[in-house]
Image 1 (spheres, rainbow, N blue to C red):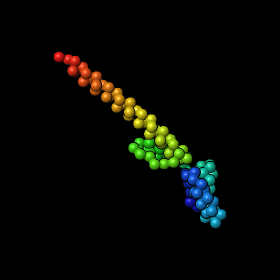
Image 2: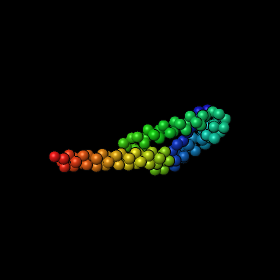
Image 3: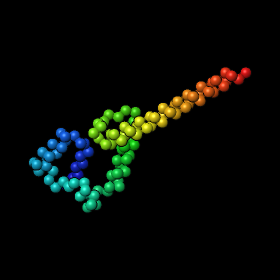
Image 4: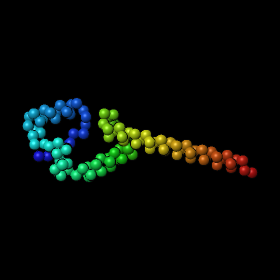
Amino acid sequence: GGIVWLTRSDEEVRRKWQTLRRRGGGAGVRQIEQLLSGGSVDGHEDATSVMVDLLLLASCDVLIGKFSSNIDRLAYSLMAVRRGREHRREQAEGVAAEAEAASQRASP
């Protein structure tokens, strides 16, 4: 059997998955806990992959996602932190440039 990994918490996805399982299409698909304990899935590798995805999402200029997704929420939060730092850096650079210009005007 293959691995089915539902990452969306969307009710429609849940209903479709339940329908598939009732029809036998999901027969033999094990839960993630079973895959981890059986060694079929490398939890460290998967966690690293999620972190890479999260950091890539957070580095975007625009994020289209859902607040029902924990990954989207984390990415959005990281984007806000990054933008806050960039905004503060731009402000500091602006203040430094203004101070430099003022000192040059004041110098004979």
